[in-house]
Image (cartoon, rainbow over all chains, first blue to last red; front, top):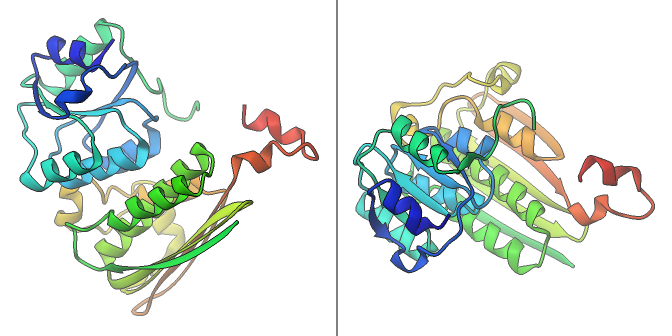
Length: 120
Length: 155
C-alpha cells in the first residue's frame, strides 16, 4: 500500500512530506526506544512512535526509514519538523494509540520488519 | 580509494546529536560504498555520537574509509567506564533522564555497536575518557571469488 493509504487507515494528519504520499509501504516497526529501532528496524519501513524529538528523525535518516507516524495524537516539535523537512522524511500524526495503530496497519497487510528478535 | 576526516562532537549538546553521523552517512554514500556498509557504519557512528553527547565533555569521531572497509573511531574526554563488561550488557545503563527522553539510555548502545560492526574494540579509563573503534567490512569484499564461503553467510 502507499503512504496515502496509511494516512487514510489511521485518519492521520500529514505534517511533513505531503509530496511523498505515493511511497510504497510494506513493513513497519513500533517503538518508543530509538536504540531498539536502531537494533531491529529495517530500511524502508514505517516507524510508529510516541516520541517527538529531533532524534526520531535522525534515527529514521540513519536507517532510511520511509516515514514516521507519531501516535497518541503526538505532534513533532518545531526542531523536529525543520529537520524532517531538511532530510525529506515524512511525518504523520494519528490520534490512535500505538497498539491500535499497529493493529489497524497489520490487519491491512503491513507486516513487522522482523517477527521476533534473536531469529534474524 | 581512501578517505579520512575528523569530526568534533560537543558533549551535552543534545540538539546537535546526530549531525556528525548524518554527515558521515552522506560522505559514505557519495563515495559509492554498498548500501549495507553505509547503513551499518551510520548506525555504529550514531550510537557512538549519542554516547559522546550523553557522557562526555567533548569528543572526536575519526572516519577512515577505503575499498575494503569503513573504520569509525570515537574518542572522548569524559567520565569513562568503570566496568566495561557490565556496560556491554544489554539493559545496563547509567543514563540521565535527558538522555532517556531522547529515546536512548536503555543500555543498548554499546551492544548495538558490537552487533553492527564486524570488528569492535573498546577501552576506557575512569575520569579520563573512552575510546571505541569499529570496523565495517565492505559487503563487496565478502563476495570476493577467493572467499566463496563468505557468500553463504551474507545471502
